[in-house]
Length: 373
Image 1 (cartoon, one colour):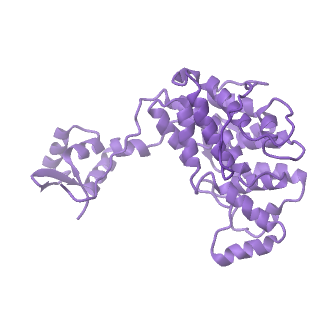
Image 2 (tube, helix red, strand yellow):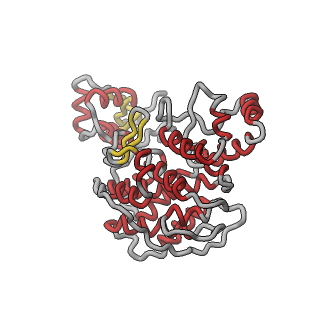
Image 3 (cartoon, helix red, strand yellow):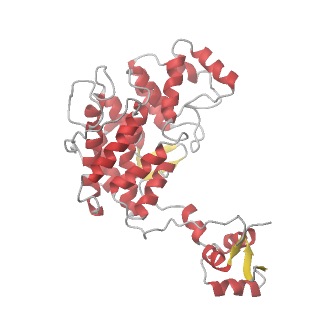
């Protein structure tokens, strides 16, 4: 039996009053069916009418295009507030790009505060992103002003600094920029903060990716910034989102000694080669192109040998991040941590934009398909 909507559900979907639904019936635009003495309407018929009338009812609310001034993703290019992201990654500091995303105001040599090291007792199996998530929750719990939604930039700067300081230190601290501070927690090698700065900028935002959508939904309820970031981190933890770079890292580590053999083994098992293709980009990922170009100045890349075997597709940012981590002896999950810390900037930017919209606007209507009472 086809799914049916009640009168009120149909009215919500069509964005009209229940009386108007009955007017549609009298005009032959809808067909009413009696089920247990109640008028019911075909989902497909209501949806067809909604499409014809351009209705912006409950179902449309969560799927409509969301107006944003933050990122533009068009023709395989990425821009932050109208500026080329690869160009920003070549000429700007992460802190200044963050401020640009949050406010649309240019800055130079902006400094983030010193972070507080948040002590946490986690098992050895904890990943770096586990530590990021716990640090965000504890930082929020320790901020009595967290519900002041007008403190977005102040909160964001302190939060990013706290998260970075909460990762285990494995090198000697050098410099005060976020890229300097983070490097000593990811790599034992000679610091290359310019590379890390570029990676952070490239990953700071990416339009309405699924984690950003989760963050905006939380912001629409006027959740405080820490909760918004936690929502984004929850979605990023999904196997089809943030963890992809760790999978790519493990693949490249396997491919170091025999790139062709590693590719052949994946093809034999029917498993896609990690780090290739993208759901939005058609022929190139500009973020990957830029980061890989920078990495080529530091040695031969196993990623290039793998790329040569895949002429029908293109490398994405997951492969570039994996190569970055491999080249500088980082943990396999370091790319996830870089991704998460960078994307806090974008989540906060979208939250600040969402706070200005009508609250609770993402309310989808469930179409019940079970047994009728």
